[in-house]
Image (cartoon, rainbow, N blue to C red; front, side, top):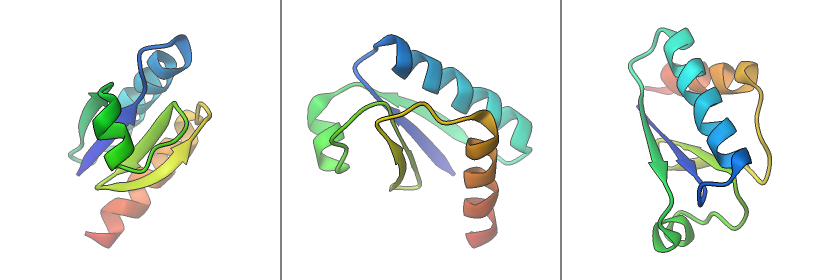
Length: 82
């Protein structure tokens, strides 16, 4: 599973990346976390506001910092679909 955190590097984007990394560890699922700050890649993914999070290509959050519990839930749901 690939989880991407989109953002230019602002404080909220860094906070989101940290939360996603902690949630990935806590989930017990094999997760690769990638940070994306390239504007072209963000646009190609359909991200219009940051921070944003996508799981296996689907944007699950944009424009806000999600809670660790939310991210764990998203990872668990995506793992069930695999």
